[in-house]
Structures are given as structure tokens and as C-alpha cells.
Image 1 (cartoon, helix red, strand yellow):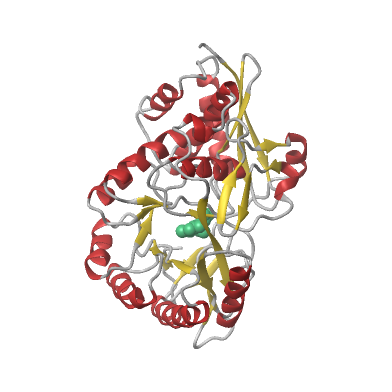
Image 2: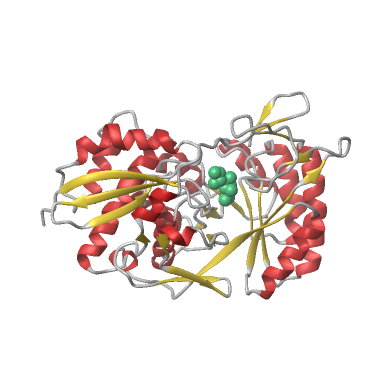
Length: 408
Ligand code: GCO
Ligand code: MG
């Protein structure tokens, strides 16, 4: 049925974190929302939608999601990249939301129906000190959480005022930081490896086998360092080790694989199926964890999930606090309806988020479920969203002791 797109609008909001939301409205007044948040580059994505995609897509049939996706991806010739794919993802999610609302069906029903009743999740557990992390993990077990991604800050052995920053923590730590633009930290991989091994041992002893442990290296090690680490970690039976090397280094990943049986997960930096094709066909990972907002939306994530399944690889979609509830909801609908779901990353929700978003999902005993509201099922209060003003923020930069830039 023909159902033309009447309007495409972007909304920036910051209830605790910055989010860029896309709103698509059809001629018959159905609205769909999608997430187009790209941490630190929200304004760049907004410009692609407002200045490029909007005028082009208004008037197209909203029902033809695959056609619109192909048109924007292939038709633009210079394809891919995080900014462009995030813009496309926002539109794609909104179109699926519209289709669900029109059919009076939740997304999971539209894409094949549930394969399971609930989806296993993992939370982030961070401690500025090792004992703090262990205390936190033990508290989490009591609340029913069954899997954590653990991280900690490391005090420099020589300079007590310097901490090595662990992947993506918002906790204020003392480092060479002046403002939101010059947000720089120090890094030493050998200090990190030593601390990680000691921490993992203590954590495993403290939680026993009652908790799955995940660690995110954030692509900060060289292949040989990562191979050594993954081998050493075997005795602690991690659920997976994430991004042990730079995601672009496929041969580096192969080296890690050849030297260790620690399960590996990768994918949050990939933007197209072509970025992961070699890794999947060569079975270099056990979990693929693409980010629905940076990978172009629901349409390509369904495709990559099927492709991974053919290679006995499970999913562990990226789900940090810096993507909005629309992306989280989309992840969960997919988690529930694909055969090869593994685990879903999640985070503890800040109450302020619920001033703007009415969440359809809820967590219990380490699992997540979602309501049967149509489409993505997320309610969005646009007026409340306007009151949380966007705050410009940059991602941090890491440097080693010579001052050279290191992977963050
Ligand atoms: C994860 C990720 C995040 C990223 C963040 C960057 O595994 O959850 O590594 O923590 O660092 O999404 O904006
Ligand atoms: Mg990560």
C-alpha cells in the first residue's frame, strides 16, 4: 500500500546523555522514530539528515524499507562511514516503527516472531579500585545479574596522580583533562595487562562461577600482546574478550585466534556488512556485536545476523548508554527473534531518561523482556526532550608516555 513520507525531522536531546532522534511522519499521520546518535558527532549526523536525506526522501513510499535503504546506501555511490550509516539507521528504524504501528504488531512479530521468551543481558561493572569493583560485582549478583563487563582504573606505578583510563567510563578520574575538548588520558599497555590479569584472578575467585565475566580491550593492544593476554585469560573462562585488537586488523585478530581459546567478540566499529565479511567467513570471532545505529539500522542487522548464523557465530549487539532507547528496543526485538542470539549488552538506566522516553522493556534476573506495543514500542515525549538541551562533547584521546596517540 502506498504510504508517502510527509516529513522527516531530527530532535536533539540530552536526558543524561546526548541523543539524536529521527521522526518520520507519513501522509496519513503515522509517526515512527529512530535513533541516529553517534557519540560526539551528533551534529554531523543531523546535518546529513536535515540537509541531504530529508528533501530527497520526502514523497517516497514509507512501506518500501529495503528499497529506500538500497537507494541511500548504493545509490549515493560514496557509501559507508559512521556518520552516513548512522543517518541511514535513524531513517530505517523509523520506517520499521511505522510499519509496526500500521500493522499493529511489535517489531519482533514483523521479523519472524519470537524464538525465545527473554534475552540474557550483561551490565557494566566499574571500580576506580580493584576492591570497589569486586564489591560492586558481588552486589550485582544479589540483584540477579548474571553477566558483567568489568573495568577498573589503574594507578600509574610511577606517578600516583595519573590513572590509566579503562574503556569508556564517565567516572571522573584525574588525568590530563582540561575541558570537554581537550579530554586526554594516559595509557601504558603493559601496566594494563598486568593489572587486568591480577584483577581477573581476584574477581573470578570472588564471584566463583556464578557470574559470566566479559572484558573490553577497546582495540588497545598489539596483536602479539592481545594473543598473550587471551592465552593467559583462558584459565578464568571469560564469556568473551571484546575488541582485543584494532577492529580493522583482521590478520592481527587471526593471530589472537590461533593462540587462544578465549572466546572473542568484535563489531561496534563496523559500519557495513563488508567490514565483517572476512571475519565471519573465517570464523575469527564467536560473537558479532555490531551497533544497530552505526551499521545502518534494522535492515542490515537482520542480514548480518543471518550471515553470522551460517558460520555458527552468535550475536552480542552493542548496547551502551550512548545510544538511545529506540536503538536498545530495536536490539531487543531482534534478540528475541533471531536463532543465533547470544547476549545483549545493557546499562543501568538513569531515572532522567524516563522523563523523555517511555521504555517498553524491563530487566529481571539478568534477562530482558519487551512489551507487545506496536513497532519499536518506545514512547517519546517531544516536549520533555526539548527541555534537555544538547551539550557538545568530545570523545577522549589517549597518549603513551612519549606523547604519541594511542587507540582509545
Ligand atoms: C562498549 C563500547 C562503548 C564505547 C562507546 C563509545 O563495548 O560498550 O566499547 O563503551 O566506548 O560506545 O561511544
Ligand atoms: Mg566495546
